[in-house]
Amino acid sequence: MATPVLDKVEKESAASPYITVTFRIRRFNPEISDAVVWEDFAVEIDPKERVLDGLHKIKWDMDGTLTFRRSCAHGICGSDAMRINGKNRLACKTLIKDLNPEKPITIEPIKGLTVLKDLVVDMEPFFQAYRDVMPFLITKGNEPTRERKQSPEDRERYDDTTKCILCAACTSSCPVFWNDGQYFGPAAIVNAHRFIFDSRDEGGEQRLEILNDKDGVWRCRTTFNCTDACPRGIEITKAIQEVKRALITRRY
Amino acid sequence: MSSDTTSAIGPVEGAAYDVDNPAPYIEPPRKRTGRTPKSTRGNFEMAAWLFMRLSGVVLVVLVLGHLLIQLFLDGGVSKIGFAFVAGRWASPFWQVWDLLMLWLAMLHGANGLRTVINDYAERANTRLWLKGLLYTATVFTILLGTLVIFTFDPNIR
Ligand code: SF4
Ligand code: FES
Image (cartoon, rainbow over all chains, first blue to last red; front, side, top):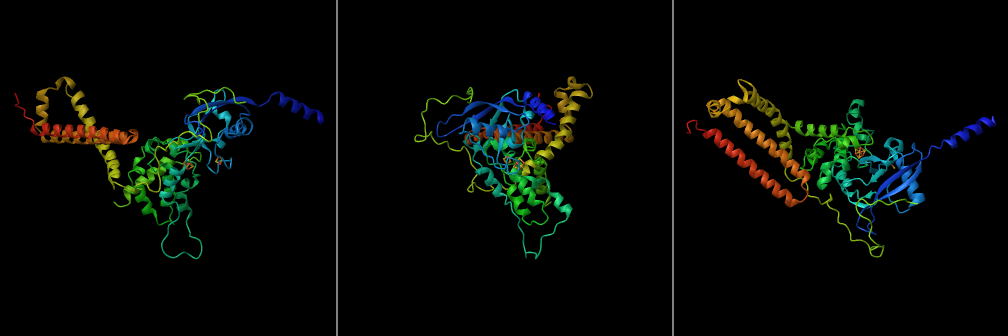
């Protein structure tokens, strides 16, 4: 029994899964300089690990000043959206082997929001747009004594947009948002959609009026960047189009 | 341990700044805050969006028909001359066709460019000037075209 196990261990250590990957990270520290530098880190990593693991190795073993957000590390909290190889993704959901580890992996903060330090951006404008669409249930009349009932079909109507984790990957991939940051952005519209098409909610009219703004849904150019970026696979552009249709058909 | 620092944008020069002497604060270039002015122009953007869709559909018919008649049917380009235009504009049907095409194409194109300017011109002043230029050119072309269609005189020579 002992021999085969030993053999296996030896074979595995002979064929180590670890490879050396270059992480090219866009660094910015306002306490040191107002200039941005790209810094390369050579990291020993198993290609089946994630980009977030690589960032951890850098922060814990190489350079403790590297700053980035992460919390759950499992694609739930939405705090580690970043631009990896030019595309917005969650570092905790991106495997090294899916990225072509032969070349340096570039990591930047998401675009269109002010960079505070390294990969950390100021999310306030993003959340302000989210707050502006009133992302909470609005009802009139008396509260029911028990739960508010809803049929499975009615629930299905807005199922896709309930999956949002507010990571800002979509909004910060949108070229219209990059321009002046006044566009509500896909994430706010997705979360408005979640309530507009909820049969229990009665604030749909107000939300539609908010999105009828000049920086609302009409600034969407159907670029589909948001749909490509969303780590939850939400059909964002479709949701935006549904809001547009609701705006056009509600009165006429 | 960090190997080789490549600097795409420029290296950090000397340690001119430190914690006690921080780099100048970088103003956020734009910001959406609670005080961002609310809705300003009513339903104009919706009307513009709808107009783009509807005029686009109509223009497909008008422009393709126009190209077919001018370039392919009945002798193609070689038949076009003063007499041909004069003959066509003698009929109110073609006058209306061309007038509609002129107005829709100009407004459609102008609105498209307006959105391009809105999306890509970052400074308020640049926007103002580009849009000013755009609107002037649009109004000029539409008025001139309309004038020609209505006051066209086949016996001008
Ligand atoms: S819609 Fe998708 S990409 Fe946008 S914030 Fe939500 S989860 Fe992130
Ligand atoms: S760390 Fe929570 S989503 Fe990636």
